[in-house]
Length: 230
Ligand SMILES: *Cc1c(COP(=O)(O)O)cnc(C)c1O
Image (cartoon, rainbow, N blue to C red; front, side, top):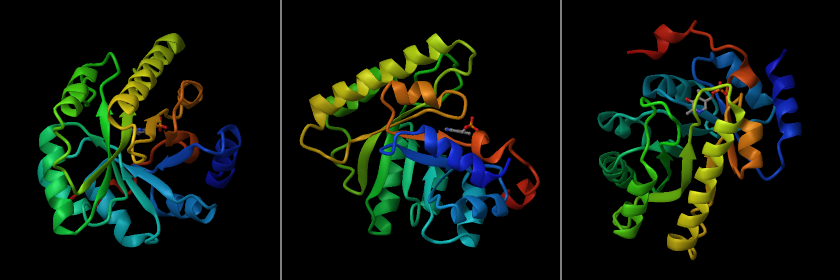
């Protein structure tokens, strides 16, 4: 199945207001180019080296979303060009990103990653931590960041009800934070949830942005992997 075909299939099932981030991690340049020529502009990557490699070689109007755990010392490499960091998962990272963005005179759209899965290893803030940050106005000094919403990854499970519960609780939390802390701030509007296997549930539960990889590109290839790593 071609990338172009898969993309059009997914677009058909998505309400038009929902943004689609094509997760291109581990995919080679030609697959991304095919999606680009089919009209796709938002792409998601989760490793800095790989993103830099692709950024250098692909059209400059691609909107790159960083969706993986970002190490503090690597924020500076993507700060000049990244469209959105979806995976801010600590106050220290937010602070570092803010400083890097300042150096490039940017205000980087940034989403707070929320830990909603049962797995221990997934990154992200807990609900209470985000509420504390907002209540204490801890993010207000980050003038080079624009907090655009929340991102979450559901548990990797066959249990659809479990997934639905996690997305629905994240959506409720998003609405609560919006009402309490961002009523007059139109920037805070994105709820990024949903991947290949669970995006339909995510959309039903209120997602505004889905991140889809394998359903567009097929299984992840490792062919160029060596090129991406330093
Ligand atoms: C890999 C990844 C995706 C896409 O996963 P698929 O199951 O291939 O659609 C989405 N979000 C994040 C954070 C990812 O790391």
